[in-house]
Image (cartoon, helix red, strand yellow):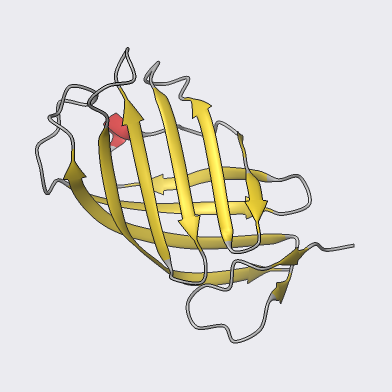
Length: 134
């Protein structure tokens, strides 16, 4: 039975009942010195995700900067009401990542941590293009 997805993105007025949802997020780097990624401030990012609510897994389907890619790595997520959180180690980069998506505000952030926990690089932006898969 499909899970009740309360991440009500892109102006969908009611929660979506679906097992799989795809969406696109766009933003730019607004925090960090570049220690974690080497990328400058205001570096743009566009990423398309696929969320399987039954399995609580997020998969990156496409990303504008391959240097930040997680590939087809399944990313475990936790959903708390309108907040999706994923904390994981990116197998492609060897860096620790945190993804947060706030469905009610259509906001997202990706934080990439260097070898230590100090001076992470972070991208902030918005999500749109919700596609509910059958």
